[in-house]
Length: 117
Image 1 (cartoon, rainbow, N blue to C red):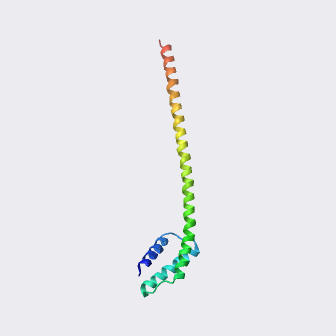
Image 2: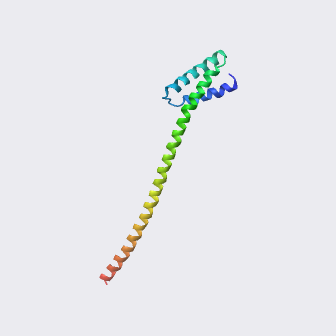
């Protein structure tokens, strides 16, 4: 198998690792896999039209998949930023509450000391 076919085989293997639900890509994936097996057995080249159709199907599917994954990551990053801000705000509020407890406790302690004097 020529060197370029090794890249094509690697691409077919990488795509094959995904659970492809798109019928068109699944069909092209199967066709390319079978064509590569036949080419390996017979030493014949894979038809250029089959390769082009496969590459187009892979590009179409994975471009959308990639865009969707990036969008999902951006949404998660926004949520994480919101959570970080909420944590920061809650920590600041906690600090205020702790200082209020300390100050009110000081007043109550002084009051108790006066009462017991």
